[in-house]
Picture 1 (spheres, helix red, strand yellow):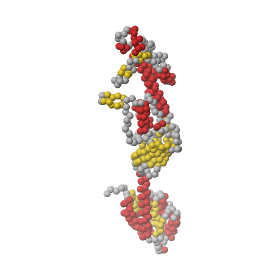
Picture 2 (spheres, rainbow, N blue to C red):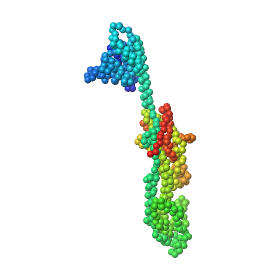
Picture 3 (cartoon, rainbow, N blue to C red):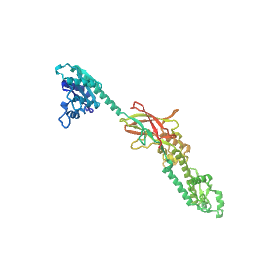
Length: 521
């Protein structure tokens, strides 16, 4: 059966020569641990001793060569002392002491035992025995050791200590791995990836190419009208009028026109709007800019296929074309002024683009995000200015609310994912396969459609508190190493210094709390 990769821990046996009988007890204890616990936990303890794991090498002191070959790579050590301390090295009282110091300096585990076993006095080397006692005295302030009275006690204690240490190491390893595999959620600025600060941005719509194109169109109209002024008032009657008066003499035409048509006049409000624009933009209008010749408005209305009457004009093509161009200029300026008002309002707003990031190593679900914004700072979408009556249809046609308020997706940031509601804003009604007509919606209707589109973007749940405004929204699923944008940009009428947030989720047991500092450029 396939198994997960086994983790091997090397255990160094470091003992003077008078305790060689205990080496087999150490190996037996390790073998029993591997059989009982190692296979169940995918770990194995491997015994290392200079007599079996070193090899001939030159170029350095013998103990330093042993240190490089086996000691420094070991994960733990077991040391046993009885009456002998061992042969001194260049740096320490014995090779065993040097090996122990190497392990301690590397912050590795050392199992330390001192034997209290009877021995014939004549066999004791007083110098070596004194060195053991001195080392035991020094070591008591650096760690825990055990004194054993026979092999049975040693085997029992060492087996127990070995099991406690390595099983605890396994638990720590699993806990660490589990911690590493957890999702880790935070809120960051989408443009800088900072989880500490965010720099508010402005729309800058007044300098947009869209508005500039509308401005150029107005200038083109004015230039065309300045170049094509009508120099004289004509009294000629064109062919269309003659068709109505075939049985009447030429000298009676003027009398006839007075009965069937009125002079076309341009209202003062109409002129004022265009004049104001020209003055503001320092554009000079021709002295005969408003002259329409002898253009008349027909009192007889022409019926349309749908029963409505259409206004017709009596005059030359030049006169009719000029009047048509003036009307187009008027409405272009009306629209331009409404765009300017709408864009000015938007340009006074500062906003930030935030994202929720999972920088952990596991996915998360059912994520609830709560933002705490200081009172009086947040601009809710209900308080946004509606586009003017003459531009709202165009605004909706180009979906400007999505352009302005949604956070665009990038190669590293996903757009906010939520179910889209079906839209019922279409103005076209199919009457038959061969005939369609467009229903004209009132401005109030169009504002409702615009409000609906904003509601589809700003999907936050708002809660008013005495000191703050609370925003909440959900993310159903966010995989690891992934960032998802907020449903919309956050708009401010007054930029706060900080925004606090709280995040709860299915696989993050503790609430994540943090704050974003807002800094002006």
